[in-house]
Image (cartoon, rainbow, N blue to C red; front, side):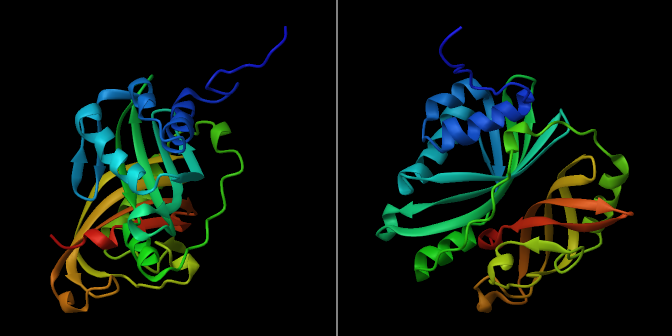
Length: 268
């Protein structure tokens, strides 16, 4: 037989991973919204920054199109994929030049926690570090790109671990997680320290699941603003901090991982 195989899903990849591959490469990296009708359910909804962007055609696709218009050469790099067969988390970097800022460039992190129905994506709890993006576009600096995953689209499902989920649930519920568990936050790994941000008084775990010793989560915490997000006049005011992360558990404790926080959306 001659010719090449043009199938969209590589041999051996899990179908959920194959959907995310198409989401990253065929949709976002290529700027092709027509792909959404194939990979997303019509009632698909993105939960991000306190907003529910859905259904697919009426709300979600136009919202993403606005970002693509601002960053016409938008790139997306998969930094980490974890999957248990029923759920999947993607840690990624987006990067590009903004036509609204005279071509200024930026690279920023994001994490998405996806649901599917066996054939299409149905929803996603996500965060992107828009605070870091805004800072870069304003001052002309550019964050380094985080290393890509070596083989993100070959990730195979690993069974969920309830014990690991319990460890992370307790860690999240104990208060501020900043500076604990050997976890990297926001773009602090690139020298932009910002601290804990909020003196936490209440925690709501919006989503949480595991794949082996890794646990993905989206959490909303409220409390008193401590500073660190560019609003010194709001120190001491009530604030809401949303975070998404992928962390690793060993010997009954969180021992590393990555968390992205919504520093730009802390105040109503």
